[in-house]
Length: 273
Image 1 (cartoon, helix red, strand yellow):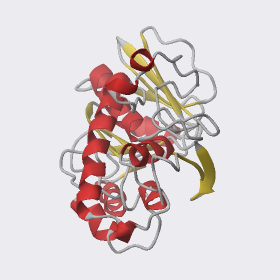
Image 2 (spheres, helix red, strand yellow):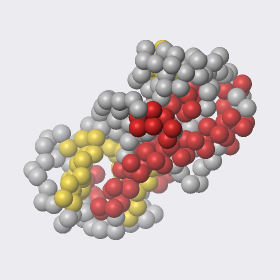
Image 3 (cartoon, helix red, strand yellow):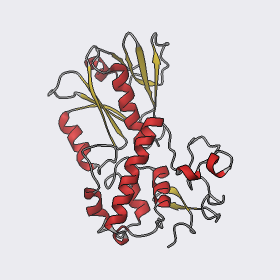
């Protein structure tokens, strides 16, 4: 499932290609046809992201049904291209076009036309997002500091903090030497603020480069004279998908286990219990 930086990048890409322009809105697949017909010819006025949720603001402000709510889920993808757009396949749920560009959405978990009130309800149930300038660490800390749940599980709970996925979870805990099984309430407030600050920086880099890189400059392949990572994830990491390989820092074996229905990766030497 895409992590939050990908959704913020998509919001920026939609805004760059279609922002302020009248767009043709269609649903070649047919599942969004009625809503597409209502939006066809309207202007993309704004785009927003919150965690793993993308919102496209089409049409006039203040009216019901002015936002397209998109959640990619496990299989959703967005592809952009320059005009002329090729004939759409029957897997395209939502296509936006103008004279210069097209954008195709395929396979999302959610693609729905919602009202302002429905959008507010989605925001209300999500935790703070490190990539939203209006969000900060305190609301998440209020829940983490009282919880017996492991910090690794809390980081994946979108009601606690929005946008963090399996990669950022594993990597930020490694970078701060924190045992993933430590209960949230056993963290110090200083540790949590350091984690939050690091997530802000790492995820902003993710938006900029459109990939996740988490190793510090002194631990890059060039600095350590080691081969670059070869993985469909792409970026340089410390522990994610490196089970049974040696840690870049201590040389110990990276471990993996199932936690919160996802594969957890950590180094027992650098993240002692």
